[in-house]
Length: 404
Image (tube, rainbow, N blue to C red):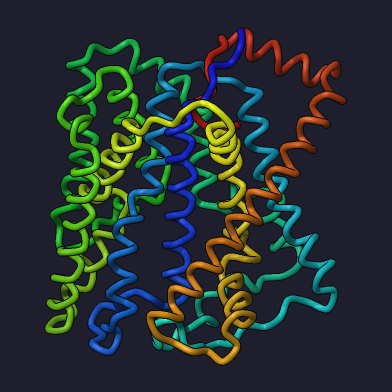
């Protein structure tokens, strides 16, 4: 059965979401965000960084929404799960080997403290302290990236894909009303109560976990099967309104945190992926892009290919050996004098995002060629025939969902 052609507007959304993730990581590493209780952290750069952060915060949930929206209509493919795992391994193992070739005497040391883009002192030593483990323990992270949560998102994303046969089977077996009741309970538990609580719950992982991904997947599956006419018509309004709501709450909590430390936790809540407005922003962004019409042709083909390769951008720049280093390496190259200000902020942001996105797409394109060649060579092996039989037993479907 031939695979369905990917829809270019949703592949464009994948690419935009990855750019948003890069931007958020830049803001965090460059110290361009407000700090609870710190009046000194309030300036033009951090105010701008806050606005950008909350217009990008929907990106992670959006990735899962795309998977659930299309995944519920397709079939689980064991071969795709194996391909996704090998893609993660490719980066987990390739990056340290490449860095050892480039830096045979060891990685350049980072300063323990440096001035970020906003003119604030960033404690780089403390943030990278956990990355200095050497020897066999470091290689455990490389060899077992899923089990060690080398990439927290990849771990949850991969296990979520393994669970899709169970999730899809349950959703398809339930009536619309049964699914609504189930989703209502899950959203109250994982999203509703935490969105209102002024104190942190021990149960709450801020949306950085598999449980929240399952919840978002089920929301997307419901939307894929039944839709939501109100949000479908007003996707952009929901996205913009929810993002502005996050900004307003965050700035309000910042002002309160200057008066009392007790507001420090809720100051961070709008950053959490399981915050109600963050979820609504992702749903709005998804439906906003659903209305885009991209004419078939060269542009649509490039967008489709880029969307497929975007996961490699994440696996490259979030590798444990690069995660806290890439910003300072690029900054020392383009801004060696350490200048600050809004103009410098935009310059650093643009260069970092362009370099990381371009490098990630190029490397993953090379990886995809290598994987296809390896697939052809191994096509008639017992392992590949076994995976093919498993795919046939699970049923075939389109590939708008997760992975390649």
